[in-house]
Image 1 (cartoon, one colour):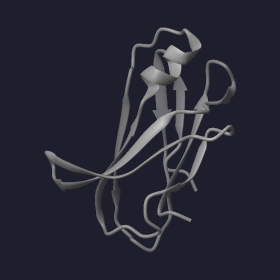
Image 2 (cartoon, rainbow, N blue to C red; image 1 turned 135 degrees about the horizontal axis):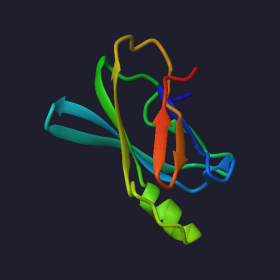
Image 3 (cartoon, rainbow, N blue to C red; image 1 turned 120 degrees about the horizontal axis):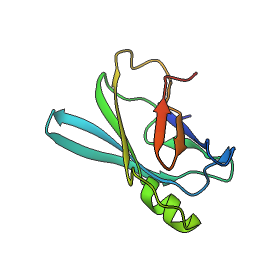
Length: 112
């Protein structure tokens, strides 16, 4: 299993958000990000394999292409992109970063 996984749920529709493009990046400096992996959510709204199995301690970011997701549904959105920046303190742990999404709001938390 990769060090980082995610699950995207469409809270407005009450369903998993399938086909959302997501990019994982690491921070070399606060202004310099390097892409590590890209994927799309499966039919259950999950990405189980996103990047390496282990990541060094540091700052990382997930970028969700929510605009493309809502465009495919013909739904206007206020947030065409959601970026979640998080810190890996213990490289031995697994980090699950879920996203609850609607056209005009989103929330996240550290999952298990």
